[in-house]
Amino acid sequence: MRGRDETTGEYFSPSRSAQRRAALDILALGEQLAAMSDAQLARLPVPDTLLPHIHDTRRITSHIARKRQLAYLAKQMRKLDDTVLDAIRDAMHKDGETARREAALLHRAEALREALLGDAGDAALTDLLAAYPQADRQQLRQLVRNAREERAKNKPPRAFRALFRSLRALLAQEGTGSADPADQPVEDEGEDDEDTHG
Image (tube, rainbow, N blue to C red):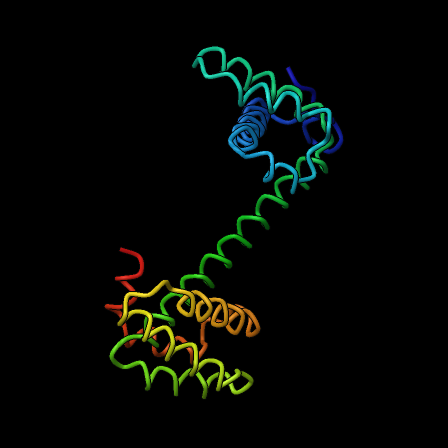
């Protein structure tokens, strides 16, 4: 039974429910860590003492044994300072956010490329150049022209890929603002956008 401070009325320790929630939270974090690749783990501030336990958990496939190993991993994690666990959570959150932003950027560049190569490509190019005055107009026009030619003649997609890289770099310069005028041609060319992902 947990004690209570007679003067303030506060409990000396967290309730059993709070302790259980904290334990389940650490167990869930352990599961997430065990599901990550070595490269993903390397980007997180995971202490070296914890890595062998994560690798063991990943290696075990038997359901019961894995559950036992996860519980052991969580027990080892509870020995860590709260600041270490918070740092791991923060890094995971930031990494996830970065990945989402990168994926959104790739989708925008892909959709924009399809808009430029579609039927309304000239209008899309005009809109793009208006939205990004710093863009290399001549290079973009040349890449669009070459990519269209490649498609028409069934050639290897070298200009097609180069156009994508140029668009991605251009969109990355502007950051991730959603109110970007360059999104305009993408919305107009909704069918092309679906084609790229289907």
